Length: 298
Length: 127
Image (cartoon, rainbow over all chains, first blue to last red; front, side):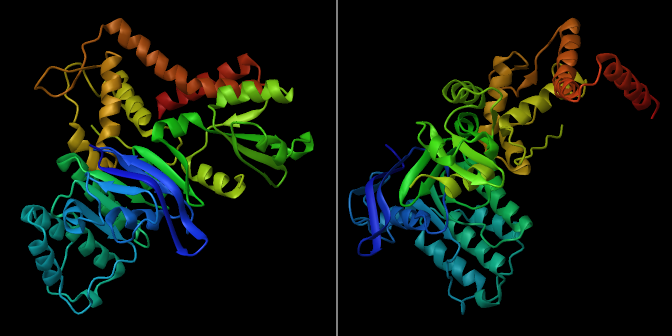
């Protein structure tokens, strides 16, 4: 059974303006998926639909075989959720928030909760409203993972945190992977976190899946080709080629991302464009993201 | 045994780990029979997905560099002395190949390049 299955999921907040447009996503046990996309691409919407906070307006969603709309409690007990804009009640003290979650989850692991609160140097008597953004996020993370959920949904979990706190967050997620074999679906704009944590990459663009591939395949299966503008090759020409994902003119070069490894790309482009010495290189995730969203065909 | 990974480099993290194990063996910092840290103990301090580390270990096993006996930690495989020498050379070759390409791009004569390398070698030895 798949951990998460989304079929033809759509969602519009205003009529005619679909944020998600018939998206399919299947997640199996133990996968760690990095969800990429620009602001507004639909990442948060997707995660909220998976948790049952939002309803899909078409298709079907199943989490561990359950429909989040029909069995919201059963689904939430199997899922841990942290989001960037999560609001914990400001008047409560840290230990009260934790106590409340302990009662909600039958599988609460007190040992893990204690370990995390000491790792994060939490002050249990502090009121939530007096915590920094990072400290509040740590309380949210503790509450989301202390029942060792088999599925973690993290929406920009490290957004706005300093590098040390981001690292602690990452290490906590890795610890859970190692100990509980959790499945993780997380969105992030921090490509280094994605490289460290993810085994699979899903890029959403304009409400649809653009790339869905293992991290290693992404690194080996895509490359950046550079043409001097003086060569006379235009971005439009390149976009006509079947494996070209994006192309744009920047400065005095046309930069194009191809769904090919560098060597194949160099050979194929050389044959097609009757040119020698085409510059093709593998590209780091961050560059790929920027090139794709900046020069995609739409 | 300390590994480091650099997620900015564009080289897959599992390959970075494999290279570092090979380098440690070639340099003698890891000896045949030495145990490697477990996947779990490495994942958190290194800040990488445990699967990435198992992938590196599995590939090293397949290459015959690591040896696994059920229930025991992974160890460095026994290798013949002459093979170790060959491995040291191949490590060096990997580092020199880009330098050779650069020399040819800059149209530096092989004799000149070799002389420079010799000078660097003796300077390193002295310091």
